[in-house]
Image 1 (cartoon, rainbow, N blue to C red):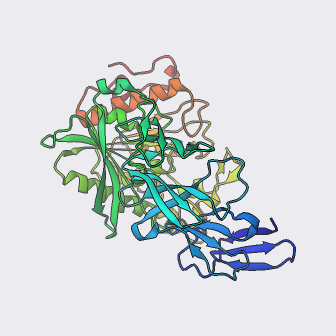
Image 2: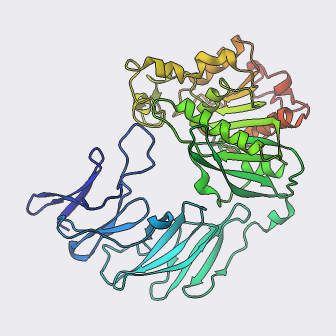
Image 3: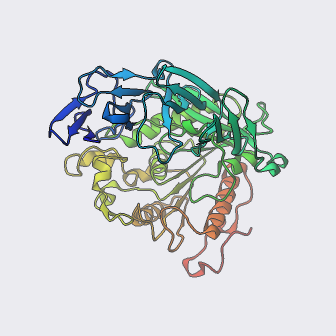
Length: 480
């Protein structure tokens, strides 16, 4: 084609460059909805939702907004046309390309579309006939639909996977207009285990905004009982309500299905942030959400735990300086001192970490010298005397994202203050554990740690006595 389309993130506008005439046109200017991320809460310009594909002959280009697909004139002359109607009921609609050789979309083509309902997190597939503008839903259910979707070349037959928290991913074959047939039966052995359920939970955060999260309960849940609860989080996860969680040892995150099977409730809240105050965001959403679940009556308010990795580890480090509500906390690869981490290196990429605080996830929105007070306010290190929660820190010496000396600063400060703290260092491991033996080790330690502090079970040796550095690799301390 002769056009190059690009999105100017600062102006939040699309432009098209005509390589023949050399002219640049602003396009899609008649679209009133945002074409960049409406939910962006980092101090950087929102990314575009993206381009779908060109129509045949460069007659128009298809682009996304948050929910819909728009047909746009590449010279900005003809009005833009919204081809779908997802916004009215908050359903995100995205094109599924099942032909790897497809170069463009034709005016008579029937598009296969993926659906995701932001309200109840259900998903499905639909078709859009561009010649008649007919939109048909193939199916929409309370499931998660896998990304590997295939269509027969000369027939209206699809194959795809569906899953829920209770049902592992299975392959379905679906002749459009009929019922889908399940082809596989993965993990039949799951029926012999106490599994669990996942439900969408809503509450009002301390900011006054309605918040969402996921509450996982044991399969044999009894609402009259009081359960220990672990709170796990990383940014926002409610869109994964229907995702299956295999009970395999994980690189760093909480093994949700494993703990739920052992009689824990697990709560995963979404977190929204105010620029400059990332720690406050954790407090406003995690703490309010925890208390909202406790009010339901089935959680023991004295048996609450926290688990998080990386950015989640930082949130834990901050949160336990603000509240003593939690009986135990586990922070993997946390930043505890933003003033020293600011000038560090992300060894995986070689990038200086300053951009992270000024423009992306750490959300300070200023340099260290412009707003030193915000760096100190959001650095848990300066508030550790307030901590009363027993804490495990994981800091690996080959971490390629967070400088592992942050874990050293954290641990030595907590020790100097006489706090209950343990530090795990898996030699030659990166930000997330790779070796299966280490994943199994941390799984066992997490179980022992939370079982002790949240269930009252006898502490293992590494908790009760610790393991000296001179005995590392010789005495694992996992016995009792």
